[in-house]
Amino acid sequence: MIQYLIRHWLEGKDPKSPEVRQMCGTRAGGVGILLNTLLCLGKLLAGMITGSIAIIGDALNNLSDAASSVITLIGFRLAGQEADEEHPFGHGRMEYLAGLVVSMAILLMGFELGKSSVEKLLHPEELDFSWLAVVILAASVAVKVWMYFFNRTLAQKIGSETMAATAADSLSDSAATSVVLLATLVGHFFQWKIDGFAGLLVAVFILKTGWEAAKDTLDPLLGRPMDPELATDIDQLVLSHENILGIHDLVYHDYGPGRAMMSFHAEVPADADLLEMHDLIDHIERELKEKHHIETVIHMDPVVNDERTAALREQVAYLAQQLDPCLTIHDLRITAGPHHTNVLFDVMVPYGFRLTDHQVVSQLRQEVEALSPKYSAVIQVDHSYVERREK
Image (cartoon, one colour):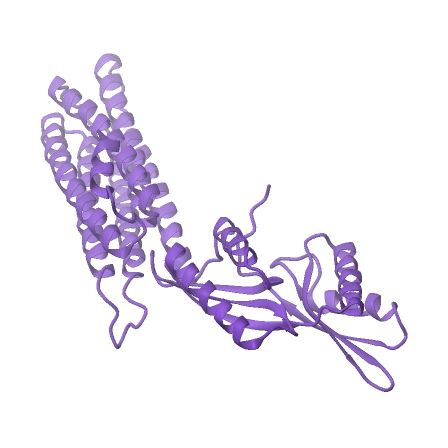
């Protein structure tokens, strides 16, 4: 049913476009509001029948989920607004802000439930058992599991951090309700007063979910590196064109899903026709926008590729690799003078590298200048804006 529903929503549409994302977010928000409201009412009924703080807390958790769905829906609607004079890159980050508000609401609910559960632990009370409450809790678990798969599948299709956070919340809710259900049955059959303990476990589930959701939405707001798979795909597309010798200094700016800008340097032969290279760069910018919906600015770097420069480039790249395999160089050029020859290049150093930038420059300069007494190395340190993933 999930696949059919999402396939029906996305049929013939681009799932990454802002319009389709807004439509999916609105509909998913409506589904979340309806189901969470029904679950909240059902659990409140069960909680009043049994007098269980854990069940009432779980009901309030569903109420917060319904409110979160409202915030998510509003966030997607605001994110879908067109760019204007005050926000020339659109309102896409409103989706991230909505996700952050959702996570704050989850954390607040977890904290309040934790307080109530501690009080229940200190002052345990006898509960009234009801099979109706058991049925309501079991149905709630099933509904939340369905919502998890629904939101996760939709998040993967449209690439939404907010929907992924909602999916994680649904999974956490199903686990929390399972704990409450188990505590209800154990309390009835074994006469153990563990309602407060079950409520505390539910609170921990909620707090964990809220923290993870907050982190997932804060990262894009603060600015995160480009996904390495996207960077690789961009490399392959750009380098597939003749006369593009290399690219570097790739910088990515995320203004919300489907709204991004990037810039990079493209190396072209120094002796190539300037007008032809300009036309090629324009063509690549249009290609990237059509394929990835990214506004792109490309800076042309003319590269002298004579035998001497090419040989020295290989030597310097080898020296950088000897210092550490993760180091790369680019933009190497030579300016010869009467008494010495400047060897200018940039070295790419990852964040958190074992050596400081000064140490990298110092050691590389020493190695390069050892190649010839005339060489004077001029080295610029760059840092990658692409995420590094351990293999």
